[in-house]
Each structure stands twice: as C-alpha cells, then as structure tokens.
Length: 407
Image (cartoon, rainbow, N blue to C red; front, top):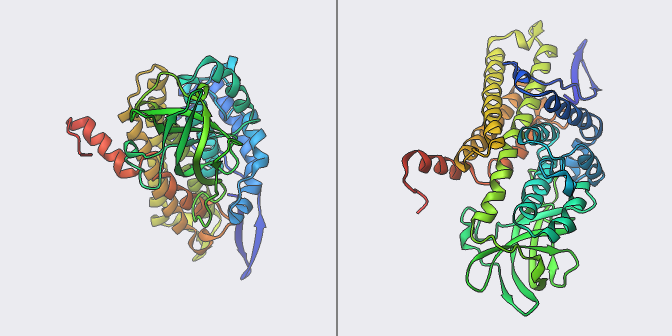
C-alpha cells in the first residue's frame, strides 16, 4: 500500500509509506517463467514503484495523465514489446508482454491502457497490416515514445456492434476524404497519429493512419470521468479530412482487421487485471495485519481470513489461466474465444477483489491514501472496454454451443 493509518493511544496519525508491494505467487508460478521473464517483470515492478506509485494518486485526483512517464514506459519496454527489434520493438514473447501489462496495471489501469493502446491497437496493426514504408515511418518512433498513437473503432452509436459504423471515406484521386467520429478513445487528446477504421465506397471496413495536423481532424477531450481518471480519453472527429492513400492499410478488409487488434489488447488486459487484483489484495493483507480492533489485528478474525483466502485463490486461478494462454499465444494457437474467456474472467475477478478489499479497509478504503478505490473505479471501465463482460460471455457461449446469440 502507498500509505497507512494506524491508531496510537486513541489518536490517528497519517503515515505515508513507500510502495511496499512484493508480489504474490501462491502456486510457485515463477518456476514456469524463464529467467528473462522474471527479470523483465521485476524491472517494470521497480519502475512502477519508483516513478508511478508516488504520483499516480495525485494525477488521478486531478484527472490528468502523467505525460512525464511516457519516456519511462518506453524505456521499460511497454511499447510494442513483441514487435521485432528491427522496427524498434523489444522482440519479446507474449508472456513477457503479459507480465509487463500486469506490472503496469498494478500501478494503474489508466497507465496500462496507454501502453495497451500504443502496443496492441497502434503498433500491432501497423506491423501486421501495414506496408513496409508505414512500418519504417511509424514503428520506431512509437516504440521510443517520441510518437504516441490511438485507435478509432467505437462510435457514438456503435460500440458492441462495430460493423454498423458510419465513419467513411471517399476516393479523391491521390487521397481520400474521411468523415465521421469516434468516441471513448484512450490517448486521443495527445496522440500524434490515430489508427482509424472506416468504410470505403464499397462499404468495406478499412484501416488507415490519420496524423495530427491534417486539416479537419480534431480530438476533443472527454471530461468528468469517475473512472480511468489518470488516463486521457477523448473523441476523434473527421470533417472532410484529406488522408493520403499511402496511409491506408493495403490488403486487410472487414472486421478481421480491428478484431485482430482487439484480441491482442484483450490478451494484455487479461494479464493487467491480475496486477490490479494483486495490488488490492496486497493492500488488504497488510492492513489486516496492522489494523487493531478488539485488542488484536483484524486479520485474526474468521471473516477477514475468508475474504483474503478467496482473493488469493482467485488470483492464483487467473495466473494459471493467463500463463497457459500465453503459452498458446506464443505457439500461435490461442483462439479469440480463449482470449475472451481470460479477459472476462480476470477483469471480473479483479473487480470483485477490489470491492472486497475496500470493505476490509472500512472507511479508509475510500480515501486516496490507499489504491483500492482507484483500482475499483478503473476496473469498472476495464470490464466494459475491449468487449463488455456480457459480450465475452456470448463469445464463449457461441464457441461451446455453435449457436450465434448475437443476432
């Protein structure tokens, strides 16, 4: 926990403490990781403790994204860790990516959102669907944090049904004219580029890169959020924007393009949610050992032990789920439905742990002296974005029954 409040002779003193998180590995999962995996995880963990934990509560209270951490995110490999090194990425495997997301979200879901968008929703499609010229132009700068990106799919009237999007472009010779709007876009207020999905004149969904400064392109910020307050959220508005044809992804058509990006992002979220859950558990465990009531630590009471035992059980199950998913991902065998299951299960698990941990801290649980309420509010967004809890249930349902319940 970042801070603790203890009772001494009837008076309460606020004692600010450093980030004391140590990690929780009840089933000795570290034995399933390589030495490189553990080194990557531990280096990101130490960076979070040093550069994120001391400032994140203040930025969340002020509803600002701490732009000064962008360089650090790049340096610890949070931007495109699985992108080949020739394009500036880390050239790492999928378990490394997951562990990085776990540690970053342990700090804050909003910070992890920034890294997820940059990696899975901007760098991934440029690398996977883009031309060699697009890769060389954008990826090295995105990996270093010199350039930041965002991803435009969701629209005001089309969230869970992206195929109904109305954003579109028309051919105008050596460029296209883009019109429409996207909303709930992480990073949009400060992004240098946007990977946008729009319909062409044939009604096919295509991807293209829109650059800040193109006439008619604006990114108004979304205010008054109760969740992801330390993340910058906004809109993308296209008013007759001229986009060069060389900015269009050449071959990918249909929802396969954006859904491929979302699969990568959902995979990262499945790992990230574990980080938020572990932080809440760690805070509640420490509090239960230090908070005195009725003459002894509250951790000695049965109901508190029940809560903690259930928390570490669910965290352990989620760790096993994501590790196996990571192995399948490394072997290119992970299915979209398997990724959906992990995203839904782990985010729901983290949200329930946040709520239980908050109760264990009583009134102190709602203050910014502890990270729990911030995690809880953040997870209310994470359980919705990149596919809602219910949508992921239907994806699993369709996969096991063979029946499509979406239509």
